[in-house]
Amino acid sequence: MAILPIRTVPDPVLREKGKRIRTIDNSIIKLAADMLETMHDAPGVGLTACQVGVPIRLVVIGNIADVEDFVLVNPEVVKTKGVRTVTEGCLSIPGYSGTIKRAEQVTVKGKDLEGREIRIKAYDLLAQALEHEIDHSNGILYIDHLENESDLRKVKPGEEEMEDAENVD
Ligand code: NI
Image (cartoon, rainbow, N blue to C red; front, side, top):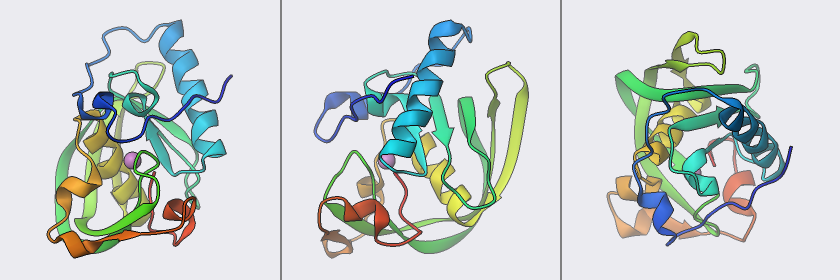
């Protein structure tokens, strides 16, 4: 396993729409393991392959209380419910944190590394992390959801993730 460099804005790979994964081969399994290690090292509650320079639809989630680390291949949001205001940060946008709207509840489907279908109904931080990471897979960053410029604030480097539990990756 290896800790991978995390791409930051304005790296164009962050704006690429990740390609669907057709075959879950050893390179995908190794990349997922490296992404989990990178996420823990950062730390963040999720990471996408796009953030480590590989524009494919691969997401890891972890560091969330009562949720075991997991990997999602080709994840997509199939349903959202409700709206809430959250504070969010991103490892690819160091030194900032923003206030945006996210769904209260999301239903996500995808596959695990064995190719089994997964369907997750999520609330709270897990829902936020899933929306944030699936956005990354579509080349979307949380700053795209800002309604006002004043909703983006500078924070001390390293604090964008640690400031409060609502921050993502
Ligand atoms: Ni992010």
